[in-house]
Image (cartoon, helix red, strand yellow):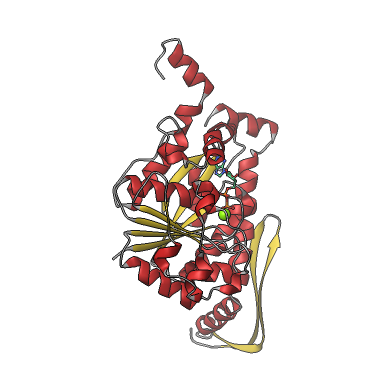
Length: 88
Length: 265
Ligand SMILES: Nc1ncnc2c1ncn2[C@@H]1O[C@H](COP(=O)(O)OP(=O)(O)O)[C@@H](O)[C@H]1O
Ligand SMILES: [Mg+2]
């Protein structure tokens, strides 16, 4: 660790380049996800496929979306369960 | 068979035209036959950066519309016999050329030239689509700023979708003093975020502005760090392995001072 990094920790300051990098990372998550409208649909479809091995999912009531929360991008999935299989 | 390389960025003003001119001259200095196409229709610039603005008779639109033969529109460089410019039309709009016409033109030029460099307009609309239509590979120019890197990311996605086989990143206007202070993203930061191969890093250098004033690309200047950086990019385009310049060493005031007073550095 160099002196500047140490000073930053002590003062709670953040280098502007680190701020830039963090903002960029977040904004690209959103850009990349929203460029293709099928992107989230595809995730949804595959997620349901995997989970269906264990439980019955109501596809119509299933929602998946991406949003921002306290400095990170969050993928939120709401899956409505119809029933759970017995012998998993 | 020649190679068509599009120089593109998304964001304007990051150094596409400067890069096209310097790589073109650099390749010509390596005895390659080169033609530069200014695809920025309506905002012609490459001619002045090359110092060829007084020699224009025909332009890109004249060629695709068949008003002249391709050869007639090519302007020979002042210093390099093996370097040509096909200027953009200044009074037309981007729809004057179609991707199909551009592709055909590139195919024709590939028969005779080793390298065809296409200077792309800013944006992701028709002008961009035209510029990439005939390209085999791309050099994506960015500066170390959030907006420029963001646009570069978008462009990389579009180039992938267009199945351009090789896209490499050129980081322009890096300021080692600011990187050192933690006030500018470093090369590694940008490469990590974009996850793309790096083809070069050009420092912010006032010699670029001075040489552009004279219409003589900086790549010919042996005393310019940016010139050296562009010469390295040229070698990489030619498939040679060249290590990246240590920009910090050259620019740091203290290392220069230490060298001056005999402390190595
Ligand atoms: N490495 C650099 N150092 C200093 N100035 C630069 C550098 N690269 C480009 N410039 C300047 O930035 C401006 C925009 O460059 P240009 O090549 O015209 O960008 P673009 O074609 O992407 O719009 C020009 O005035 C140019 O001289
Ligand atoms: Mg330009």
